Figure (cartoon, rainbow, N blue to C red):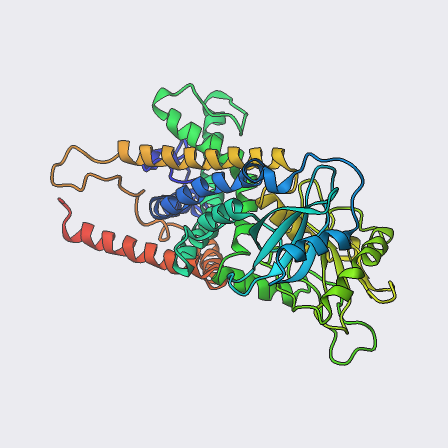
Length: 483
């Protein structure tokens, strides 16, 4: 949720409660004041994130349409050997070295042969798309990250993440993701109190339905109801979005490491090889790593057919990517890829010379939090349930935009206009909330704010800025009471 009605009467109960502990422990006035300031200053960032997120949500489907000539073929017949397909791609780009291959997973799809191109940026690889039935290349494109996003989806992803402004631009998305859950939960507190008022007034019992019996407050009721509808998904998007962020994401990574919640990986080093064992692959939503060039490309490519057959026999039956080893002491790593409707990511390491499985990692052996994080990331990317997932995300983004716009409309309509000398903008709720709140509630809230501000730095810094603005406005009001 974004901004709520600025009038104190909107969150007060119908009858003034007696003084004492019950009044002292009320959280709604404090929630209203923080909801107001956060909505005013942070909602623009949430609006931008929601708009770019709506585009990003449908990016996988747009990619399938725009790049159909690369991703799909109309030919039929048996698939050629993987080694033959890779050989054809190498012949098309003899100046580059193949580092991985993603065989066609379904009929009508193309095989991707990935090359390490020194001219590309970080986490970018050149992909040659091959018709699996004829072993003929059909085109090439730059792909990004472990998900192999083509240029359109990669552009929309970066637009959502940083507005293509580089590292400074990432602060906008981190601020939006960091504050979204705070604004939403405080909005929930206000909405629950409002529903309690409605129930006491006219017996209404529906928490999810807007109250349309009061024409003057319909915007408020739609603002709260739509905010509640999008709340569960908004919280999930906020949590998963922070894992990609710069500052909060670093703390999330450290926490996952301390609690052993990181994504496991198979060991790529062959048994008995000199040096420490090296895990293969990055984290579940990392940009991916570039493998070194194989020592003997021709001999290594010839081993792909055996490796792929062994991996299929070991249960790698979904769409997968085969990482081609860059050193003799390394194994091929075959890992299932994230695709719509794929809920597990199994992996095996195979010795290309002997066909022996040197390491395996079933998704069932992942830590529970690593599984949940992987599912959350896939949902955030619109890949967990395919098109229904993307349409749901699109609806949630439109809901967030509606909530924010309604909040600003209410804020503007309730601005003071009777005094020409007064700033013609919406005023915050009444002051003195903390002074009227019991220390038994204030102390835990302050402690929680400090902890959250340390773990999510942009929340802490902006919360301090809200406090300074609030104090400055209070001092100005005392100095110029008639302004």
